[in-house]
Image (cartoon, rainbow, N blue to C red):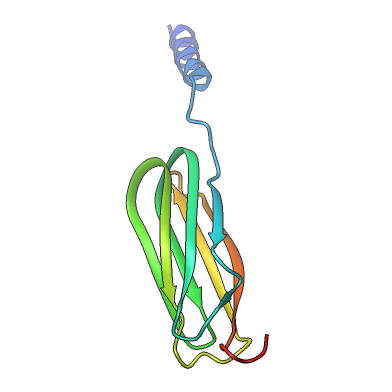
Length: 129
């Protein structure tokens, strides 16, 4: 009787291992910037697009200078893809040639996280460049 019970338990456990499971998928993210330069006091513009077969739950874009940051985010998304169009402000006192790091970050419903980064540079109008 014990052997039959043990065999039945093993059979049930083995069948559980054979059922189809959700495929683990890592989000794919695209960051597109409208321009590679920005003027002080203007905005970095573009879009971020994330896609994942199991579902995106969070998408954020942040522009960071040496002393400030600007963020736009979508939270509690329940879709296979998400897109953010953004215009993130650069401080009016940003120095010429200062880099502005733009990062897009996505998380899927299995807690996989992916980020991509690009850089634009502050150009002061009339500086001869």
